[in-house]
Image (cartoon, rainbow, N blue to C red; front, top):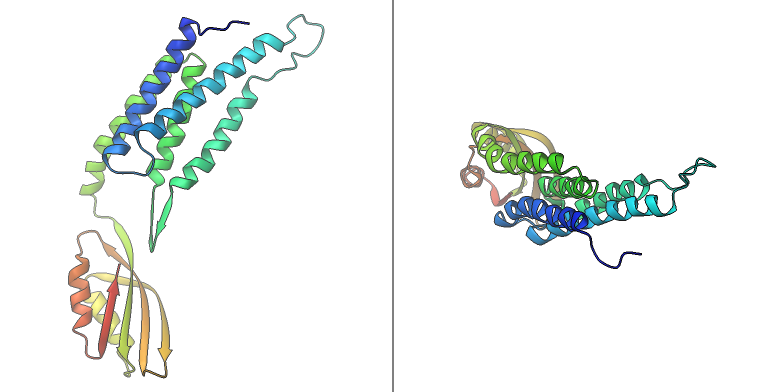
Amino acid sequence: MDMFVDMETLVRLLLASVLGALIGFEREVHGRPAGFRTHLLVSLGSCLFVIVSIDLFRMYGNFGGTGPVGVDPGRIAAQVVTGIGFLGAGAIIRDKASIRGLTTAACLWIAAAIGLSCGAGRFGAAIVVTLLAVLSLLLLKKVENLIRKDTYLSARVWSSDLAGQQERLEKCIEECQATVVSFSIEKDLENDTTILDFFIMHKTNILIGDLTDRIALVPGVRRVRVG
């Protein structure tokens, strides 16, 4: 058994590390939970899994034609795809009405695929995918900022128990060019307080501070929380 790493294996491991690190660098700059080191290690580990799979196939496969080959080199690689899903799930964070970390999870998935490609010797495909991934992360973010898209937030209002208060608040929200998607109400009988929860859809150009100030001016409102 070879106790040292041959040049071809070394190139595969190094290239997987560099390409994975390139994607991780962009995530690191933007302060994401999985950054430079995480993407490098994911790509490097995936590469090693494929190398080991191929070596096992060569060492224990039955190539004499007397029976089935007996070793499937794709099994370990397939488990990498499954396992990386759990790692990606850990990068996804639910923050009130929004979800963050989906792009980072996708980057981890891409880093694993790049590592698998390097392990299989598909250097050209790995380099092309890395370039496309890095360019999309750097350039498409600017394009997304130019698009007026719907976003969502929640608003909780503590108010005096006044007749027609819900309608007044909804009208105030609509005047801010936002739309109430769903609504719930809770009454505190001891303190004579009504708690109204709004789930709001709005455009990205709306200022949360302006919406909060407008709601606070509605008669009977005691407290407002928007976010």
